[in-house]
Image 1 (cartoon, rainbow, N blue to C red):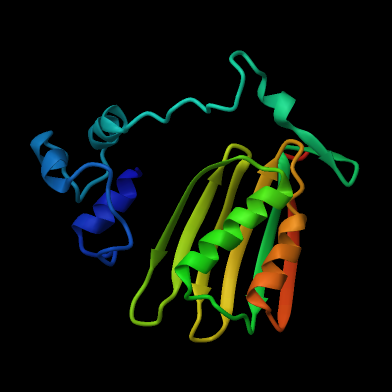
Image 2: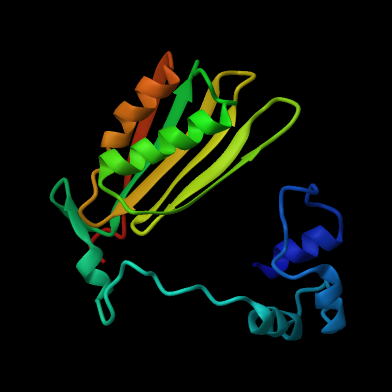
Length: 188
């Protein structure tokens, strides 16, 4: 929940359906939050009403964040973030197929699935979604009308995110794949 997003929504700049605020506008107005200005008072009210995130169920109590760091290509980092572009891909509008593909990615990478949420868009049938992992996430945004999908695969710890590439290539049969790897939290 970010105050600037709420302000844009109130001014009608965010398309309906793309952003759902955590609190209804009426609840924010009842707390005297002026949605058209990002004043210190408004920001404090937003922080005060922001829902708290649950503790990670897979993280042992008292575990240090550095215990989940890893070494990739000889570099100590939080994890590997793969930016994957699929061109000339198929089945990018098939919601059940996309979900099963994300689940297979999680399994082959040795990650822990917490939740999957996929949202279809009309009329083109594009899909935006995320598989939330204990180790981070896999996200997908597809444009089936042009055969293109953008995916992020970010994982920390002892996972193997590169194994997802094989699953994605087999599932969506792209004509071309582009992959960039970012090592997040390098030498932190």
